[in-house]
Amino acid sequence: MSSQKSPPDSADDLSMDDLRDEYPSGWRILVQNESVGYILDALMDALPGSEFTKSELATEAGVSRQSVYTHLDLLLVLGVLEPVEDSSPERYRVDSDSELLDLLHQVNGKVNKRLSE
Image (tube, rainbow, N blue to C red; front, top):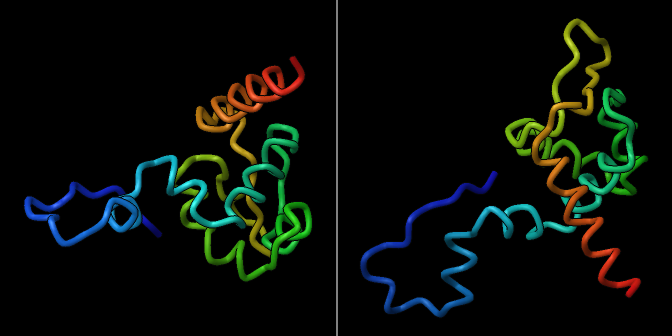
């Protein structure tokens, strides 16, 4: 999982794109892997409180199960999913209080409005 870091004092040897890759912004962390975008898109379409197994989420998002496994920790840290206790197989719930999903819905609405003008 990527995390934000502060650039080193001496970054003269790195190009700007190398620096952006090495020290990604929060936005870049969300969009640097296509699968994360597809998963977030599927979570935005889901009703708050919807529950998924990893396989079900993969199907809903149109990504491989491996992609869900790879990015699950990021999705949990971001607070868009929360584990469902005592579930077997493991299930994850769309966090109805997710500030990030709320913000993504706002961005989505603004983009769609601009594109329809």
